[in-house]
Image 1: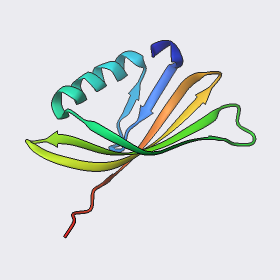
Image 2: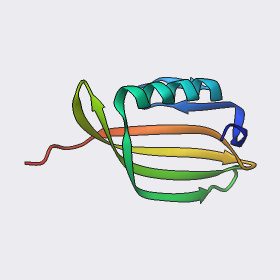
Image 3: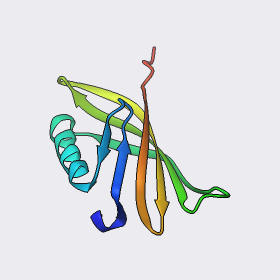
Image 4: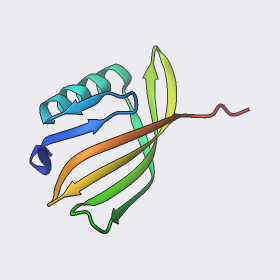
Length: 102
């Protein structure tokens, strides 16, 4: 997957963190998977091309379940992924907590 990214690839996380570069992303993902054991169920994904932009976008939404402090937590995440010349430039990730059911 590394050759499919720009050299200055970045992820803009929902908590304000900016993850820059492939090596940093790999370390971030290893830590996240070890700490929270996330699983996700994609519920939509589509591509989009905007006039005046060289690249294209993939927008994807998923229900993400993870273990935080020993409890299962569910969030709904949306990722906007910018792709240009066949390489990923950046991810913008947005997150909303699940609404408790009554």
